[in-house]
Amino acid sequence: MRALTVVPEQAGSLAVTEVPDPEPRDGELLVEGVAVGVCGTDHEIAQGDYGSAPAGDERLVIGHESLGRVREAPEGSGFSPGDLVVGVVRRPDPVPCGACARGQFDMCRNGRFTERGIKDLHGYASERWTVEADYAVRLDPSLERVGVLLEPTTVVYKAWQQVDAVGGRSWFEPQKALVTGAGPIGLLAAMIGVQRGLEVHVLDRSTDGPKPDLVRDLGASYHTDPVREVAAAVRPDVVIEATGAAEVVFDAIGATGAYGVTCLTGVTSSRRLRIDAGAVNRDLVLENDAVVGTVNANLEHFRGAAEVLAKADRDWLGRMITRRVPLERATEAFERQDDDVKVVVEL
Ligand code: BGC
Image (cartoon, rainbow, N blue to C red; front, top):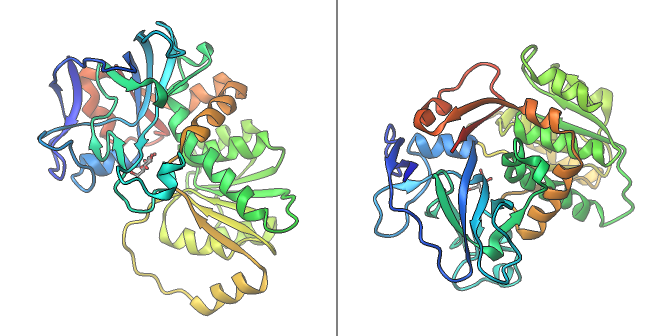
């Protein structure tokens, strides 16, 4: 069968290649791939900056934002042929650390976790794939066109849970949220903010293309002014940072009102900035502010995110997917185009 693969750490190696058909082991589902989403991590892997293949393999099948249809399910697995499913990305470390031992592998302490399509395990960008039934999540059948957005939704579902957990150290009834960045993560974070009944503001550089309307159609406000200005006017209780741009990150941290919670979701490449570190410290201390980083998602987040997607407007989710590329031309999905929001490869 065909799969989208790379030689890790080798830029330019991304290609559609032949790989052996998957054989489900005990307790595993055999799944017909429907689509995979392409995100910043996949771009980093394609550029040779990130990712590792399973021991003994030269190439890594990429794809961690999955969607498939069950073809075969073991008796008693709770799944049936035809079910729409998404595979979880991370697996616990083998030690396991205390977090992984408790199913909180998204919070792994020793870094020895593995990730489908990213770190030491093949991903889901293949015509067929297998997944342990315990690491598969069923989606509402009406999400066939947009269910590939589940994995990025798990990441922001977890981000909001982190906000709740950190906010929960005292009285916390947030009214206003500022989301920096209107890429898929920012848009999905805004969508959850609106579902939670918050007044949501989204900030991005784009003045045209699909983003402004996507934000407004959620019932949120769209801004293109600098973070500081927007934040001074809004005084958000919560900031979800989804640009990973170093300047925006620091401006966002200083942007909250008192008892503000800033949740960082973007990965920044190394960058030197001149910042007034004293002012950042003073602001955090004198306002009881908190900054929390978040990555990945565990099964609880996958199940919660599946409910979030089931409640969401299918047309709006569909508009987030701005390009669909067939597997044979999958490398085109990695050529960035103006107005791309989420690009998916159809399997
Ligand atoms: C994925 C996460 C993963 C992270 C780091 C992200 O793109 O959504 O599941 O943990 O990359 O590998």
